[in-house]
Length: 143
Image (cartoon, rainbow, N blue to C red):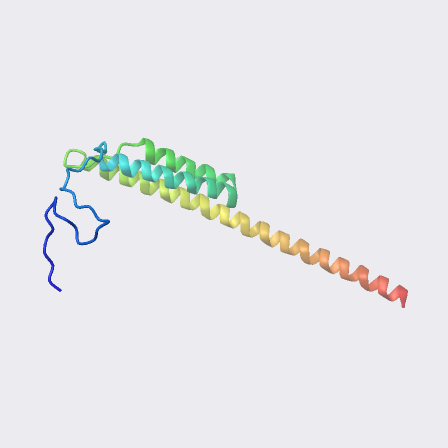
């Protein structure tokens, strides 16, 4: 089926459709932001959510660690280009050292949680054995 353009002001083949001339876009211009500020604000939002989740799930120690990383990341300058190349490398090293520190804190926290889990399991097993012994003794008295 061949198609042809419809000029403005001509009658439409479908009576309910009106054909108007093309108009210029009237959408408001948005303020331009730099990539660094967009990255910083995005990281702040993500890390704020991680901080809340870590505080709820893993406890206040991990929440504090994430909070420190979020503060360092969002407050520090994000630079680039030839002039700031050395400072970018220094920032990268500092972030890697901080990441390593956080990983060690997280590992220590995992070990504490595992140790607490082992203690809970041991106590649970002891209490279960005590209960079963008492139950067996009561059953022997009744019979």
